Length: 139
Image 1 (tube, rainbow, N blue to C red):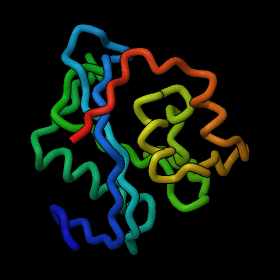
Image 2 (cartoon, rainbow, N blue to C red; image 1 turned 90 degrees about the vertical axis):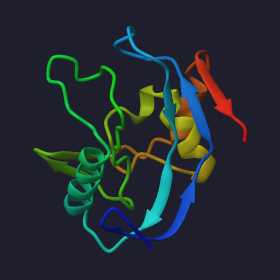
Image 3 (cartoon, rainbow, N blue to C red; image 1 turned 180 degrees about the vertical axis):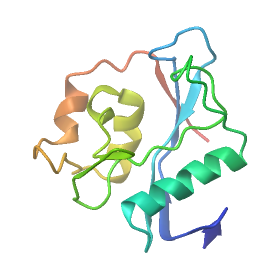
Image 4 (cartoon, one colour; image 1 turned 30 degrees about the vertical axis):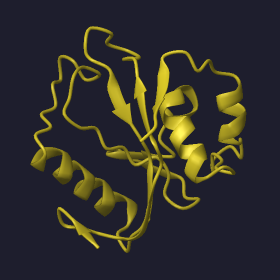
């Protein structure tokens, strides 16, 4: 299958969640989900394709408001059980453990997901957070 020049197989998509803005509160709510897929691309090549998809769909990065309104935000959360430390990419994504809007759909697809750097289960991170401001969209 192809999506804007990203070749992949075995696509799984978690349900959508609506969430209140977490950092820059003066903006509309966000829609969030997680996808799981298989690709032949390495992590940096995959990141470049994700950024190209963002641009193609109208994403303009605003340095003055990096957590502000945006049309789309694609993050590479995990890549197999790899740890990547590169100036352009950190995997696992450093924000996973603090973001309910990431943890809920991630654990829906991968209930045993864990941080490959620390061995900590993401389920344990979710258990210590509040679900306030997160709304599943059934449909």
